[in-house]
Length: 430
Image 1 (cartoon, rainbow, N blue to C red):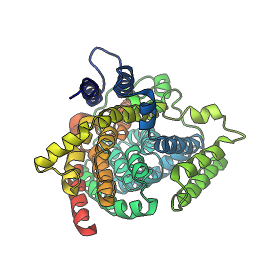
Image 2: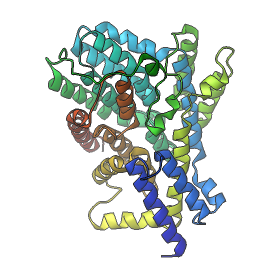
Image 3: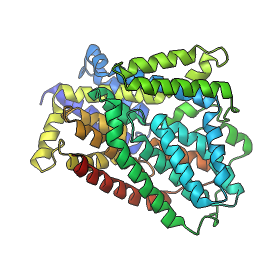
């Protein structure tokens, strides 16, 4: 192995270890910072030339991600999310029905919009409404997190890793939906059944919660998870604005319709973002202030880090090693297990980015499998997805504590059932 190949391997190993740990010991740095340092090291050491680093970034994926964040920001500023959460509260006196309505609405919104923002919008309303009604918020918050993850698996635009898979393989929006929506819907039903079984008859037994922060802190508190940093600043949600909400929904509907045409998704999305930015009432700064620049930076940095080891053929050796031990990355069942384990080690976006580099992109079914497995993996443990962490942090601000054990009690069976459903669907769908 050459000197530069060894450097690239070392940088990759340190970067992915830091991502798995959530930072580097002794440094006040998060996952995004670790990835960015890894990208800088790849260029600074000469493992990648600057022009090679620039080519490693998949610009259409970044453009799509950015554009959809602008669309989501429009709906947030129009008060759409909080209005929907308040609407669900009409069922609060019937906990089982309330849970079902919450999970259904949050899963559909997550499939069409950003699941992270759905969780951020719903969590504060849920905490205050449920505590006020004398109900335990825990099962409902867990239902929100799990349903958001499961719903987001159904479409190319449901979460960042699906966007990455769809863009790199140029998958059709309609075919992706037809393949991934059925197992996701069945998994959602299974998730509802698990929570209903575990908490039936216990809705009113409100657990002792830790003291909430002062009211002023609740209004301005920040989410501590790095990729959720787009939510920093003012956390008070705007009042419902019918005109701005209708505008956002109209543009969203038109955008989804465009996704079924041959027009490149990133082009359709950036046009939609441009239309929304041309507003007479909402300042540009307000919309762009809600763009998750941390997540975009994470994507760009990971493209460069992975590009560094791909240049020297290192992932190919790893894939060959796995294949020699009966784990063919292009076999759907083996791929599911690898994606599940790797996603819980380093989180789903870095896992997907790495796996895509040595998958056969012509095997479309495997790409659907990767999308399902990497997203379902997010429900296993509390650190498995950004949506989970957003719910946990926002709930803590409102005095509700969700521990690792409480989440795993629901997350583990939900993930296992989801993976079994995915395996069955692979066999049925061929």
